[in-house]
Image (cartoon, rainbow, N blue to C red; front, side, top):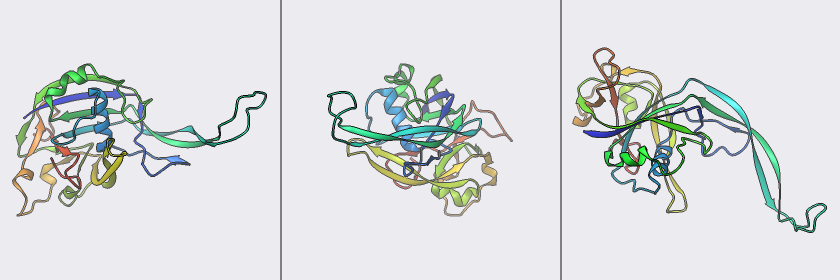
Amino acid sequence: MRVLKIVAEGITTSFRYPHFIQGVHPTFEMPPPSTIYGHICSALGEWVSPEGLAFAYHFTHHGMFSDVEHIHLVAASTGKLKGAVVPKVLEGTVNPFKRALLFRPRLVLYLNKPEWMDGFLSPHYPVVLGRSQDLFTYTEVRMIEVMREQRAYLEHTILPYRMMNRIGRGYVELMPRFIDYRNKRRASFSRYLILNRRVHSDEFLDYDDLPESEKSFWVDPETPEYDGAHLGLVFLGLVRGDGEEA
């Protein structure tokens, strides 16, 4: 299968938990699918349809640290500005908080849309991942052929929740899967398995009723080889339910 392979690198990034507003802002260890979708749309310059879009990625960083930021909380006001005749319509306070950041993040993104290569070679908007100030650089954009193999290793990625029983490693997160900007920013959430260490397919548990699609893996043949296997890719969709493979 021919796919688009994109390598993006930055200095910092943060993937905010959507239900934290004040006090502290933790970060997901991996970019949520909704962040990947927003990143793609930013490069292409339009809200592309999520139907039929599938992605896989390998994401690493060099550590996590905290920084202090602040939010201006404003509300309606009356009266006039001090020493001026201009009416005062807003007033606010400054609220400091701690934000968790990931240092030197690197994303290797695989898309089943090789026809979008020109959009990433000349992105429409500044390249960011996470916050608007987390600037990234594309160090590689090209098409490759991924292959179907019986053996693979998986690492530093998110996987469908249903794979948890087979792998028995990592941890589960509820993450935003898709944000519909055409429908009042309605968010959809799914559970995903966060895998932050290498697991070889030989370690997976097998079941008699496994579908054929789970008895082999897409692999990137250009990745480093460990124990005779290459990096496996599990492609995810945005609108197919609870972390289902595309």
